[in-house]
Image (tube, rainbow, N blue to C red; front, top):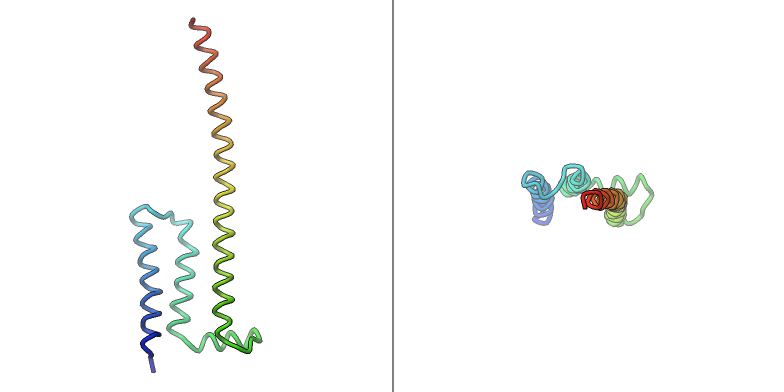
Length: 118
């Protein structure tokens, strides 16, 4: 029997997927950053629709309290998101450093050209 909370959970997961896709279409979120969000939402929808999957995974992993698997998966998803954001921030910091160096070189060339013109 399907419970109301199960229906709400599936609907919320699918709504999150639709929201992420909407952000992509409106160019508010880049595709490369949305993959983890869509994957996480799909996993939530899967767990919501197939409730015994949590019990199956708990038995396979050897966890006595099956809902603890949901917490573990949530923590894993959070760590993946933090790692991904850290990689993006690191890449942007390197790009900013390179751009600042290029701007400094261009300003130096402009100053030299201005001195020659005078």
